[in-house]
Length: 317
Image (tube, rainbow, N blue to C red; front, side):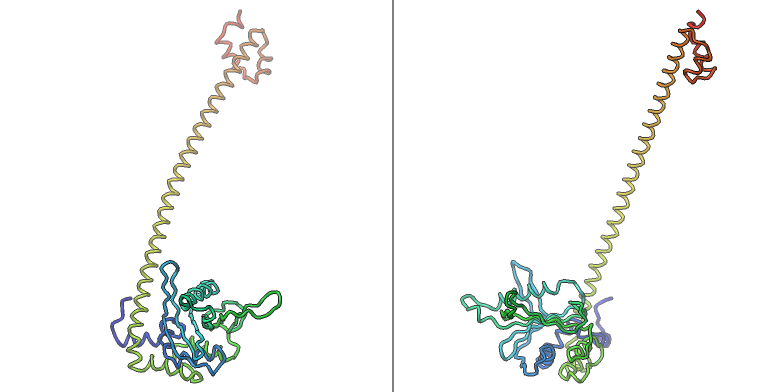
């Protein structure tokens, strides 16, 4: 897959995007009216007036891990909304939000300014999956004092919204539209108009072309990374196979050595046993014991006793 150059192809790819695609989400909601409608639905408050919107908002840090928020907005009451979109469940949403809030707060407060000047911050986590697995489309978290049950208010609020649960509420209907690659329901007028402009209007499509290039550029880069990782895995497998072969060879050699050692010991034992038996036969011959008694005492055959007799003159003396 190469970088797209044909305008018609780019426009076709634009049609395939949904609001759950982070780059399309950012472009769609950089429009103040669309962003305001999104926030009003999530906050269930039609009086919110959004004054400023920033998308793909980066917080750089030399010493710490930098972050990039999909959307940051502020309203007429100076309340700040930090919105993050996540399509894949990486099992770390709570900790991501905690870190992002801390880094964002550090950026907002200048030296010498009182802490009370920190704005109220609402972190909104939009996902295609249910973070809390409780079957609801929206979750509001709050902190309370354990001893008296009172709400602990430090100006931070966290809201989880997902597109996987539908309870018929306005927010769940909007999240359902997030999955839609086609036009958005006119129930959400501003968002529907914005998506229609980006997907069907020539000017909107043209503004999306760099985004499409970026998406496919990132996909190509990701494919390269995955191919390299796969090659490394295959190489590791081959190396492990060779190592196992060598280990098996060494084991076989050790087994062969053990067998040879065992055979040698058995042969030596057999020789030693035979020698001891012959010596016993000789001693019994010296005592003038009969053939039958010698055979019985040593478990030797008649031929074995006769052979020993031939090797010694003791019996005939």
